[in-house]
Image 1 (tube, rainbow, N blue to C red):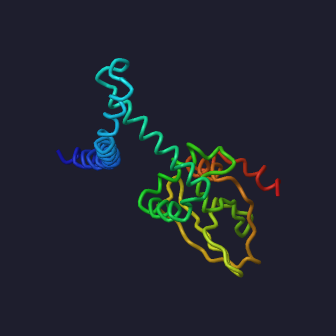
Image 2 (cartoon, rainbow, N blue to C red; image 1 turned 90 degrees about the vertical axis):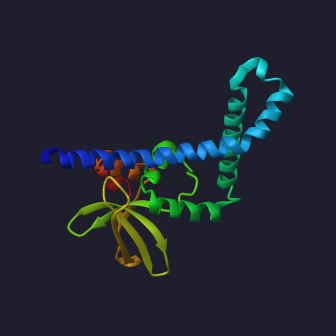
Image 3 (cartoon, helix red, strand yellow; image 1 turned 60 degrees about the horizontal axis):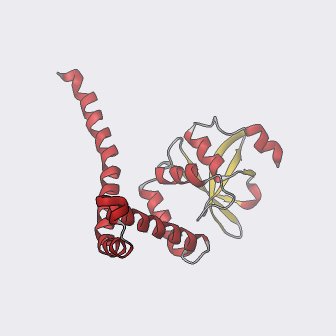
Length: 197
């Protein structure tokens, strides 16, 4: 009986960590659909969509409205209308759910301009020819603030304050950084990055 205790606990805890965000997404989706349903019913009746989609017409219209809201919100954020607000929210979100940042850049990081790219991804040159994936999180006149994460997650690491004149680094894209962290470094061609500067 004792030998099943630890695996059982791991399974339960692992299941909880999987279920929590899934249940959160389902709860948010359910609330969003409940809020939009009256509008969706009016649109369905006005355009006679019941004859086309049947009983699923209201749900389809709800989903289309949610997608439209996401597209419009993303457009305004990209244009800078809500940039400060969205950056603050996103930073707080990444503190509590670090994997969201990896997911974000794995999904849309291949674009030239990613919405709210408020960290600069770099390869940091350390003493004795060692290199780390790092992020510049803030810059002042004399210092650069760095976050050096653990791989493959972003919820641990170290923060350093480095004088500008004593730092040597190589810029990379956020997608490269996230891919490198997620794959324990295999996805970055370090020779190409270093020789490109």
